[in-house]
Length: 333
Ligand code: PBG
Image 1: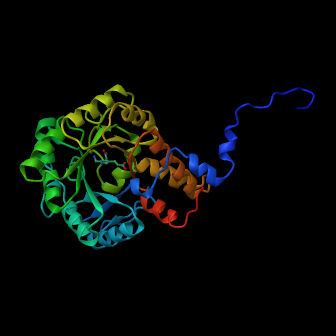
Image 2: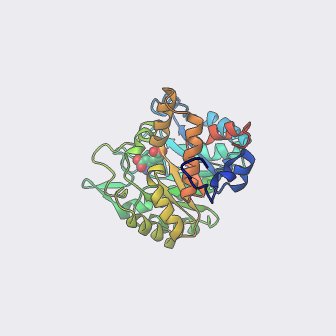
Image 3: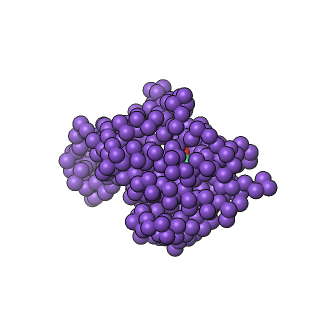
């Protein structure tokens, strides 16, 4: 080379980047539609508005609407949905959570009837159904762990009875996985899959969800049960406990701010690993995209790839339907 005698590179990684086809051949990570789970909100009361101001593009469906949505998702190749209910009434013991005719139980039957091959997951928690907005039973101003287990187990059994393929406990009560597994088995639902929100952090990223599901705690916060975002080893311990208690799939939540937790979990455990890209992650992207500050599609694809690269198998994401729609006509990138 010229006067400066700059040495020519001996190794040329750019060789493998020279065309879309070459890049495709050496790509390590993919995020397929087949890895995605679409969260769906279902409202029992048609007077609750459908739109969620902080989550543009996401709606609260009525039962007839959710049947239609399930069909569309199945046709797009989305393999699974997870259901969250907005009941008509709330009370201290979350009666609506384990009512055979509860909103989620009815939604499970509606979705299964409309799209029998779609995997239906049901979130097992009490916060959408309690008047105080906490995920467990409140006694003397505190969340009573063991009194909550019975109600969570009842909730999961009623969801399985309605036809849910997967129950997903998210209350972060100690022993909830063992309680639910044993109740399911006793009721004859040994085939029902248990996806545990194992490392669920006390996160500000759930803000838009709590608006959507009207589930914010009316006093205090969730820091006595959801885990401290600062602790990684504690996340691994929670995951190990849930696996010992019988979880089939373990989840880390949120996703993007916790990629290190996903990576550590992937290295330590062989069980299928889920990541929940939560409402706040969705809202941040939507808000910036609406202003034209970022390219929504590119950002979504990149974040999903990152979550998969960190070690997630399946990803719960509010972008699932959009991704499936985009992929319909998408050449190799
Ligand atoms: C129920 C539950 C929450 C989320 C999933 N299940 C809310 C919370 O813990 O306050 C959050 C999901 C999201 O933000 O998208 N406990």
